Amino acid sequence: MSTILVVDDERLVCDLLRSVLGRHGHEVITALNGREGLELFKKHRPRFTLLDLRMPEMNGIEVLKQLRTIDPQAAVMILTAWGSDALEKQARQLGVKDFLSKGLSLEVLVEAIQRTLPQPANAASPAEAPAPAKAPQAATAAAGDGNFILVVDDEEPIRDLLKRFLSLRGYNVRLATDGQQALTLVEQEVPRLIVLDVYMPGMNGVEVLRQLRRRQFNVGVILLTASQDDKLLQEALDLGSVDIMGKPVDLERLALAIQVGCILIEQESRGSGKS
Image (cartoon, rainbow, N blue to C red; front, side):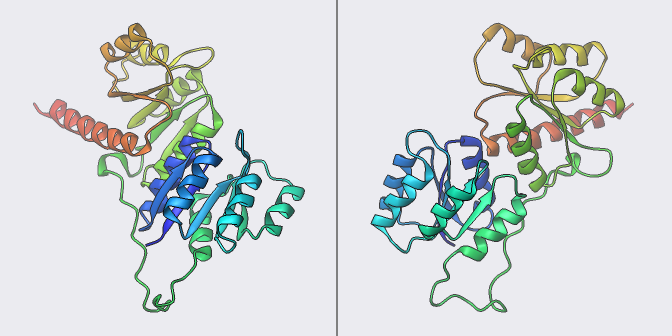
């Protein structure tokens, strides 16, 4: 097991990497800005640091320069959605192990990190090394042909991260960019569960939920919201949402809510099928 420091101003990215790398046996600590990252680096001296390039106040290059004054040999990998040849050259001159795009699949990212991690002197040979832990499988009720999770959010980074996270958990995931597209997809095939953003242009999440109930779709819905509108959220509860979660999303809590929601739906289906 290695201690890995993730420094990224996007909480969803930190949560996702902590979850994914944690399941590969690593201890992951996260920082949402460069100054916090430097303090955590001094305190924990991680074996590996994954560093976002573009952050407010102190960008990744500035953090990297200060890391080098603390530990000239520290293993660092740059992760960014906004790279450039000049920045990559500067980062490589400062001794980064690799320079990766956030658009890479989780599998490729994890493999790159595993390859880059410094090996201890007494590390087992490849033939003796234990196999990496497998990611937990999704609940049976949420897997298999014809069953999928529908994620509805107008923000592409959130849709992408949720799809990556849930797909890694074994779920079949489909995406919708707005409420109308979500309703169209449900008309074509009813999902096992819907993860639905509350605040979207055109048709908000609660209106989507209203439409689903009017059309007699009793699919389970988990609502995501960045603000608190008590009246709106109470209506969502009255319409039978499974859960309401705040943004930024706690990914592990979301995974648990989906698992519980699928189990409840399965039990309800079995109960309604009895004579």
